Amino acid sequence: MRKWAARKPLIASLGLTLLALIPPGQASSGEPTFTEGGQMSKGKVVHTSKISITRAKGTVRKALIEGFSEPIYFGVHGGIKKFYGVDPEEEHPATLDYIVAATGG
Image (cartoon, one colour):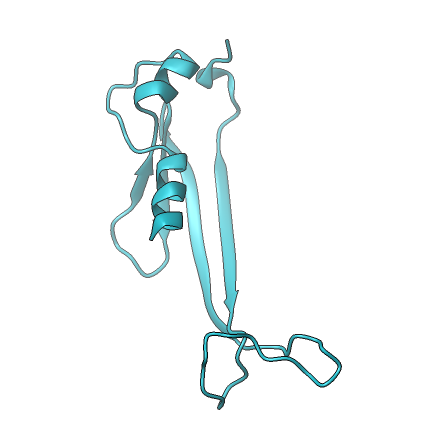
């Protein structure tokens, strides 16, 4: 069984850019616009997420999102901690929990 502690330290910076598919000045119908040749027209950048992730302690990672003062903590709980064979001091939602919540939102 894999052990979490055997992993290398995590320090990462992520950036995600969201493009608007509707060119500026056009009403948004929720559908992308296309050129006469059938190519999707270029939109404008509407937001770039800037996130820094560091390992806080053990299985806990801390994400700092630009524009927010409070960090978000990721960790393990339930079946995930059982899978990795760890017993953290404090349980936190796993990355998977945030992905599922974002997908459902």
